Image 1: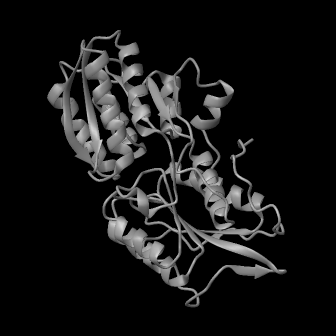
Image 2: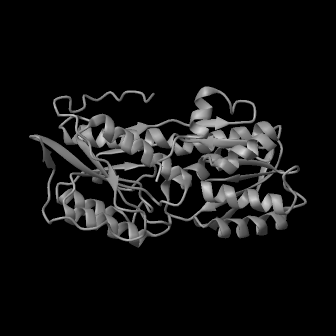
Image 3: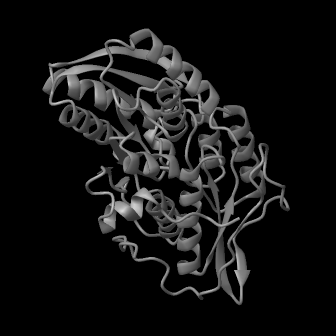
Length: 343
């Protein structure tokens, strides 16, 4: 059951819902009639909310979508329009999608920005057209351009990853970290939390490499991971990766190089491969978000704002660490294997 937000949400509106998406391929959403505003249904206003993820090819976003559409069904007066680029490095594609929704005249936008700087001008264009934005998952550098930020505390997640690494290494050893592409605030905060916590709290753990990057492409992540593993193979005790595609690439590299019994692996974000790894002792900790709750809260927050309610500027959706020991506990299990949108 989802926890209730501290918001009085549109209680006077009729409970009629339309949830849907316009497809998940790269490019802009199909245009609607220009100047369109909130639709009416039996005299009640139906809010059209565009939900734009960073990408659509990973499990995390399917769970965000499930949460967003669950919120729309509960509210009854919201239509969710889901549209994102396939790859999470396609800044230009995300800008085109945003601009298309501005032209359509949707009532509100829920956006997971691919880049914290590049998305500011288009979010500002939406604001100028009286279309508000709720940012989720990853932040924007300009906090004045959006209504609310709904996300994991990613820095705290990085701290938790460092603490788990120190626990399984008994406070001493050599580790590496694979970074995500520059400009993604969420992953940068995870990286920062991990590195700063090791430096401040665990001086016995040395970071051998933290300057290598990969995009959301799993094959690229595997190649970078393999290169790092081979370079530091004889010295290495632990590895940390900061997002789902990197987790998959690193685990494949560890398996190919027969290092799963020697090197401890802490990952950020779940997937079936990470769950399997916890059971097989090839993954030793997974920092978890709550993507279903993130999509759910983002849509409910936008609906409250559109209804004239005051919403919080920053809303945390929770952080957890799954281990082999706690993976079957009720809450951990629910975020380790969250519900997903069914195509």
